Length: 495
Ligand code: NAD
Image 1: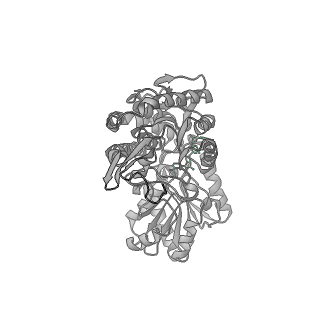
Image 2: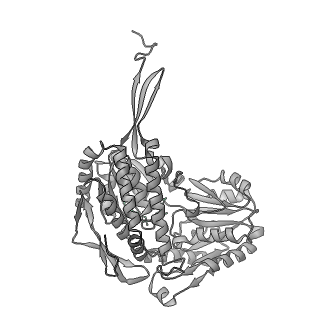
Image 3: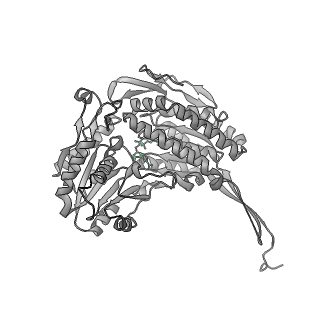
């Protein structure tokens, strides 16, 4: 286990159970104070990737025959060790990522909740099933698929890796995992812990840039790709996977609408706080955060006033290690600049920009990639800040005239990940049914309404397939029907 000191930590690649060092390294800076180096991760190459895939392919020959009971037992041991290492893992995550410690704890909590749920339901969902009736016997086998490539983004590195690793291993696959170079450290510690509970070669971990990802998604020995990241990268992965027709699960970008119905009460402080949290948790760097708010024109001014009041109470920007802080810095400069570009564009088009909340440590604020969250009032549907995925601490408000128009504007997007409808429960449920999305939440949004027991994923260009829920396990098996019918010949086939 890595000692948590402020000295930089070094994580290694893991290939066939061996820790592998590289000459060139990824240097991860602290987004709160970029002059501080948090640690180093290996900069793996295409050659390392081929070795890791070969190791996974070799390990699969044996691992595929392990029993479901053995896989569950091993996973439960890994879960216990992750729980015991919570402090080290979450503090390292906050230091390299920039999210406050409570938020890192939340990420590990959700990761473990899913791993536990996958263990609990695995027998029912992917255990072999035998059906016998007057027609004969049919065995519904759930075969592992083979070598899985798992590629994760930087915003939720631990949960978006374990969401893939747990079901892949429980199903009897072997795996090669690549986190993002923008948050490689804590997740590599987590993956090392999991890997130690499984035979060598079952879990392999690489770090690196797109060249590693390209090999992981095109190598003929890889049978399935589980990817979370941007839609543009998702398109490239579909192309890379096409020549060898790999199975795909793609969790891509989102631009989630929040529709406030005329029955929503802007004086409901608790609901308003939930909305603010669903816009600015993890500094807005979540695929499934509410990224554009649609408000009835007649309620608009009162809504803006009450929203600003609620945001000013909740938003406290500062050092991720200060427990009073609700938002840390943005993870990287490129993302900060992009968010600023969208805000400036909206302002140039006539929108008003309201700064929200409090900056707790102005000196630190100047050093790091901090941004004061903003509310963009008077945004138009065609503004970039409404059309594009901002993935940062700003949110636009768009006024609408009637609910049909709100539904139309919400659906007017290439994305369809999550969404939310706020107001009278029954009315909100009816409107929710008209939204094009993988999930629609009622009077809550983002992670607050996430339930790992049910499927999560996107429609349209937000992705292919589902994670979590039964489908989150089933998408790591091939259904193999072994049929022994009583009647072997069909009566209508001529002799
Ligand atoms: P990204 O697509 O830039 O990178 C994701 C991963 O893909 C990284 O590990 C990267 O190194 C790797 N990669 C880059 N090019 C590749 C290639 N050609 N082939 C294979 N791998 C390649 O995304 P990001 O900036 O890390 O993450 C932000 C994006 O992720 C946002 O769009 C966000 O909405 C999306 N996201 C989606 C979900 C979801 O569940 N739908 C969850 C979190 C984030």
